[in-house]
Structures are given as structure tokens and as C-alpha cells.
Length: 493
Image (cartoon, rainbow, N blue to C red; front, side, top):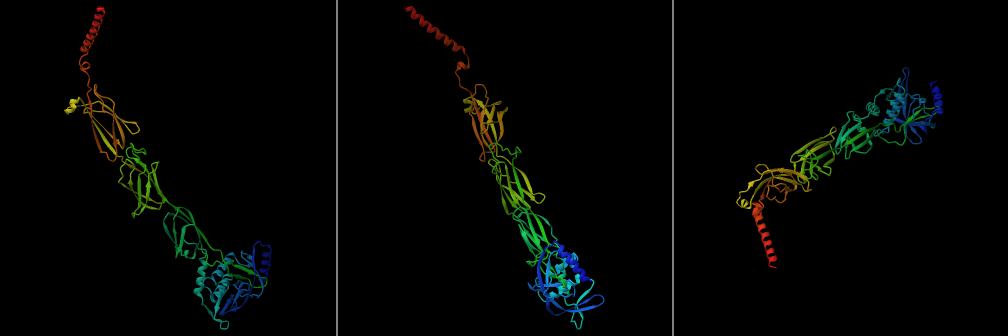
């Protein structure tokens, strides 16, 4: 009665189902398995039979009966189903387990001996009919129950139970560029997986996934527990009036997608003048062109940073780690910074920015102002000249400083790297000014430059210097003489 009900349900499902039919097949159970026999006990009776192998006549593949101890009629045409169908009187859980038993049983890797056909069949019976007991016996005459394949059963059960177990590794991984990480799978499933797709260098070694990064960006690794990549899927076959069977094929494998985020760090150096604490250089100096060398903590040279037109230099594509920064060349007109700087680059501190300063080359200009006559100059007896104004112009003729000599005739100013013109603006009455003076502050100049400057008394005639009356008398006498001569000439005529 149960078989008739199953047939009616199956026929209704067959005609109404929109599932795709896979293929046709013919099966034969004429092949005996040597020295292997079974016993079934339903709680009331024992049933004994010798083991046989079921084969697909069209492709010679092994199949297994899913109705314990039912008869298979050789030569019957079967129709195969890949998708689950309740007409087979199996739960979805049984359906999926049978697929895995067939896959991991006979034909899987080294499961090629005849015994694996029997072991697989036994596990299938125990799955579809758990209320009855199925065992091996020594033979159908003696009927002694034996347990010859305990370790093999344990092996298949382990494979089946772990089929859908994913490795215990993170699904999202953040790592550094030019780095290598090893992910250990504590569930010990990883060695069953293969890398089927990856846009980053990765490999599975034993139970570790090793990933090597060479460029930043979002990467992906897809793992799958594929084993035998058969060209067909596991199918369940049905034919009216005979045993239903299952034939081994591919099963649904587990795929695991890992998202890898490869990061790189950078060091950005902003160059500042130490005096102005800004990117504006002093004098004719330039912050552009300064060069820094970057080293890791093992003293491996990583690269150079050159300060560009915007007073910024940057080195990118740095992996996590600690770095040492050292200036090896300063910009024109600046001293090299002898300090060393250390930075850490990690996930929380990827892009480091440093404001690094340089001291400009300077000279202190000291003017000592004297005035006096040529005789005083010759006798080294000139006097200091206070209150004299000087102006300092840079190479662009821009006024950069105005100063006045003090009571000791001294004016001091510190000037940064550059070319300057010094102009005397005022002087004591009746004294010359010194000519314009050009000075250069550079790597060759002294830290202090002293300029003794001398205003010399102007030479003028005595009439202009002492008294204008003598000159007046002379001119008056000259005029009278000329007039007397004129009158003399007139009278003579």
C-alpha cells in the first residue's frame, strides 16, 4: 500500500512540477560484491541478502538504492532529478545527506575499493530508514553480525559532517601593503578548501592561509571546498514499479568570500622657516629642494622625500611600521637639521604629517660710524658718529631694515642669507656720506661682519668757511677799479 501511495504522489509531482528534468538512465544490479552480505531487522523479522553493486548502464557509474532491500528491475528506464522533490518520500535533510554520502563514498579520492560501495550503501539505508537496523553479516548461511568497517564509516561521517563547515578565519581582513599575514584556522577545515579566485597573492599551506600584499586597494579571495570537479550533479532517479536510486555527482560546495583591504601609509613633510614658523623663507634662502631620507628600524633605506614648490614633500606606499627620518640636504641658505625624527604607521595612524623647521644662515652686521677730517683719519683720531641713519635693501631693492647709530656710533642688525645694499641716509653737517655698500650673507660669510665707516669733512675756501666780509671788500674794490678805468677813458677823449 505504501509503494502505491508513493507512486501516485510521484506521478502528480512529475506532471505538475516545474523543476528541470536532468537526464534519462538505465540501471543494472547484476554485479555481486564478493564476500559481502547484509542483514535488516525491522523489529520483528530479519532479512538477509548478498551485496550487489548497482551501475548506470549508460555510463557505468555506481548508484545506490534508497528503498532498503526493495527490488531493482534491470533494464528499466529511469528519469533523473537534481532538485529536491518530496515524491521520493525523503525529507530535505535526508535528501542533502544522501547526496553527501554518495559523493564522499565510493569514487571519492582513494575510496576506490569494492568495500566502499557497500559502506556507502549501508550509510544510505541507515539514513532513509533510521527506525530499522542494518548491519553486515559474515554470510547469509551463518548470519553472524560483523563490524568490519568502523574506521571507514567514521571517515565518511567526518567528511559529511564537515562539508558545510567554514574555516574559522575572519571574512574581512585589513593589512598593510608589502606585508605578509598568516591566518590559522582553529576549526581545521581550511586544508579542505581551495582558492578558486583571487586578485591578491594568496596560498593555503596546511591549515594556514598566507596572504602577501604588493599594492593597496580592496581585494577579494574566494575559497571553496571543491574536491572532484565532476561534470554532472548528483541525481535521484525514479522509475515506476522499481527501486529508486541515487547516483554520485557534484554536490553544492561551500564558497567563502574574503574581503581584503590593503592599506598604505604616507609621511608628509611640511618645511618651515624656524624664525618665521611659516613656509615663507628668510632673505634669499629657499626651503625648496631640501631632502630627507627615510629608513625602517632595521636601517633599511626606504626612500627620499624632496621638498617641492609648495614646501611639501611626501613619501607614499609605506607599510605598517616604525620609521626614522633624517635630513640629508637643506634648502639653499639653510643649515641641515641634525635631529632625527621617528614615526609609527599603523591602522589608526596611516598618514603622518610633520612640520619640520630649518635655521637660516645669518650674519650679524655691525657698523661702527666715525667722522672727522682727513688729518684725523690719518692720525686715527676720528670721533664716533651717533644718530646716523642707515637703510638696508635686499636683492629686490626692497627696504628690509632702517637703523640709527647709537651714542657709540654703533648700529647692529642680523641679516639672513642673501645680498644686501647698505645706504647711508643722514650725516653730520659738512661731512660726506659713505658710498653704498654691498654685502653678501652666505655659507662663506662670517657669523659676525664688522664695517667701520668714515664720514670725512668737506674741504671749502676760507671765505666760505670763516667770514664773507673779505670777499665783499675784494669785489667792491674790483668794481671801483673798473669804473675808474672807464671814467679815465671817457675823460681822455
